Length: 91
Image 1: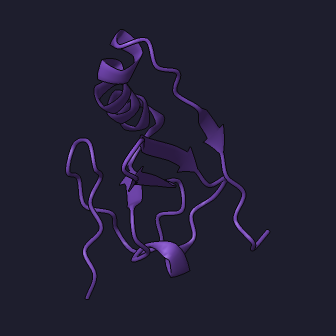
Image 2: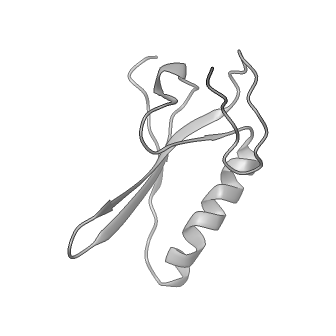
Image 3: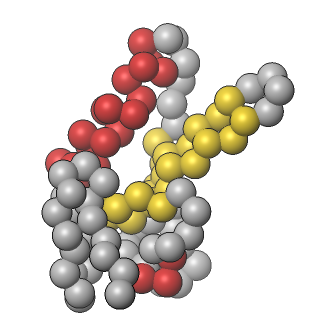
């Protein structure tokens, strides 16, 4: 059994809760750059929960807290951060 928890507050997702927020937080390194991408799906998709870099949130408040905590240092350093919604293949 898979136990899904909010990446901000740690609350456990109950089966069938569709109002949770699902997204990716991926980092890519090369010899010259480090890139980080945070993006979100427009709806919950159970088939993607175990993919690399997945993040999940129980509420928009937790989502915003995660974004603030994980992008604040980049913004302070003068780097731009792109936050865009990603649409999944299933509609």
